Length: 331
Image (cartoon, rainbow, N blue to C red; front, side):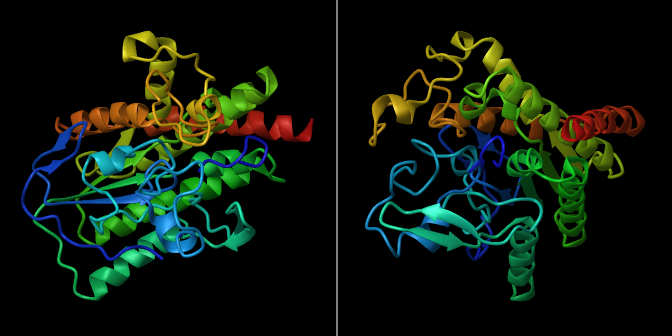
């Protein structure tokens, strides 16, 4: 992610999941006819690998599970049914909310430029499926999980305030599009607290503080902007708060390794057994970490929507963080 390194793109054909519970290994989504996901590596069910990498290598390289996911197993979205076979998950590893262009990927045998689908392209791919005859079910649900890479990019941006504001604007625009296209239930997942990720933890207190501040600024401004929507249709999922909760009680969540521990680094190429680790590598959760996200997500959407806090309060909080970032950038 630039200063913090990167978290973590042709989308798959979207198809209806039918009127049935959407199940996975961690939790169950009930009452929804379809589940569509837009995001980055935290949600990618294997799209990046299947689209850009598998034609060049016979098997997923280190850092990808057997299905091409950036973990030791299924992401939260795959666990809830939006897996590589569902056709409803448009997420790509390394995607941004803001259109970015080609990024260089090390495939082991060569480094190649890959232009993944960022959020605007993912939404456009979904719209193309609708234009092609896709029919939504009676009660579809969408999740938009973007921002981690944009937060990381802000660390080296000439104007970090503008960079984060642009990301917020793209997410809000995508929510409006999804609502207008007939999806009445949208959950916007905030960026994780990037300062808690192992790759940032190793950078010391300065990197941790900057990353946490940027995450909080992005999430605060995003919540403020989302308050303009009907809370019965648009919910915010506090990813950063959940990660902070887990970090504060690792053993209580079933982890026995330190916060900054990385399964891939500890166990080598195979990383066959990540028991006890919250993080698979320097940026991405293990399958067990994703399970917690899936369970919380399913729990939140199964209860009555909770109105977003007053936009004026969140706007002040978000802008306060953004202004602090501006001062740091000019120091």
